[in-house]
Image (cartoon, rainbow, N blue to C red; front, top):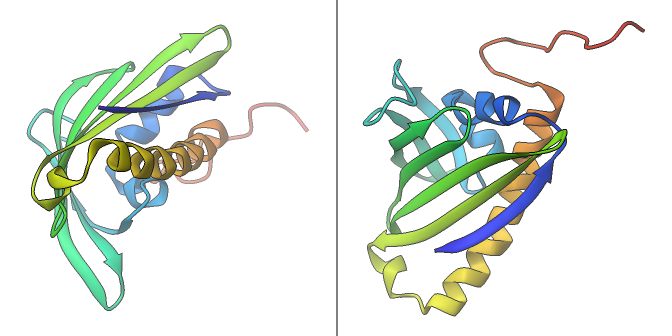
Length: 157
């Protein structure tokens, strides 16, 4: 599995709030273009985010399924992205003082992507997941959520 990590300036719960809000998925996941639907019980095991990958007009409908969820420290997803195949992503959130260490572990599990030499796959995943974690940090640190609208001020101006 390829590992990519970043220190966030927020709590593990703030990160998990974004991870479990399926409607934000296309905002922080590199490659996801839009969200078509989110199962009402997401991130319960077996629930799915129905998304599209690619760029218009070449969009492919696909899905991401929750395989394991331990709030606010761990989320494991099976991601489908045909024609490339499917992958498994494990995201952990560990407190470090006032901050949170967010680590993504990812590997291909089926399809043509499984045939990519591991060093090349690792390089591509590290580059993509570095950007993914940066986008996730922007959302988690700002308090942005799709369900709650704009965040409430945290201090008096």
